[in-house]
Length: 126
Image 1: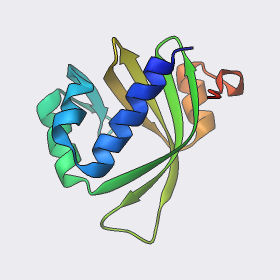
Image 2 (image 1 turned 60 degrees about the vertical axis):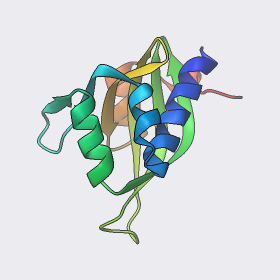
Image 3 (image 1 turned 90 degrees about the vertical axis):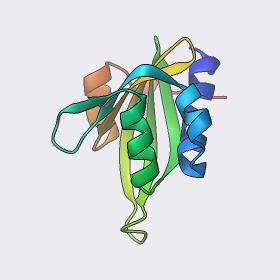
């Protein structure tokens, strides 16, 4: 387990929430892969910048699970367009050399575990 991976993911969340593009881009690989609403994926820092500046999302991380460069975060997402309707979800991050290289959104923790191979046994406890 790597606290470096956890620190990277927490800093990534903070950068998204504070709209700190410089930090967000520094924490992300040049070819970062991001989910889209149509089950495809976008790739690259320009796509990340576009998403981060237009999404209006606030991400509140909860429990975190980590193993072999994969971090799964239970979180609550609140979108600016629907501030009274937060969404509970799980996000899987792939972290390499202290940079996020992939972000995958899952509807719930069980779905994220199935996709990543992580489990409750991988719970990060500070």
